[in-house]
Length: 223
Ligand SMILES: C[S@@+](CC[C@H](N)C(=O)[O-])C[C@H]1O[C@@H](n2cnc3c(N)ncnc32)[C@H](O)[C@@H]1O
Image (cartoon, protein in one colour):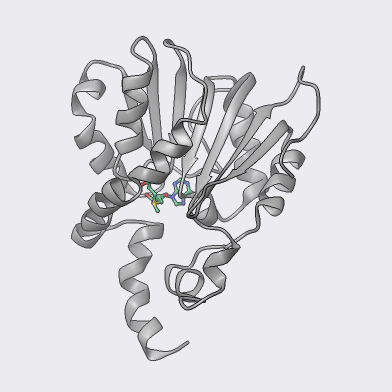
């Protein structure tokens, strides 16, 4: 590991797990910087007005706010492994939390603290590449989704991050996995998702959508 990587790593770890004042700066920057990708990804999620939606890796909470606008009669839940992220999400969505329209908790994707079949949809923006154990986490997402519910993953990371002039920066300095979408699709399939769909975004980014298995007709698109 080069000297520059050694210096930058502790700072950029705040993208993976924001902590303290530097973590708060990262969260504010991510709320702004991820906006174009987040809006594009959210447009690929169907919601009903009374949906219950969980956003995992909710970070600074901007996507919770966007979801609350989309489901005026529903409820939005947030989960993040970082207490700094949870505080930021609660602070940004304070009114909804006080009104009982948002419930934001600390915890990891491999131990989701809600009962089976709680949600119509689960979202994960710019976070699955930090999750340590996809099989355990995706099985948890499957468990908390209602039958036929949707899991939407939205990443700016594609294999392109490990190529080109900034090769190695994100994978080494930020310490994220840089998986091809096929690898995520396989993990979703094994966890019991069907109708798996992937779509690339012009200019970078992708969404993956899977439907919680049971009654669906098992077919794939865009693979
Ligand atoms: C790059 S930030 C993205 C935040 C937000 N979703 C956005 O798009 O701006 C990644 C977030 O995922 C959280 N995170 C990382 N691993 C996690 C896990 N296994 N379970 C839950 N949250 C996790 C981090 O603490 C951090 O807040």
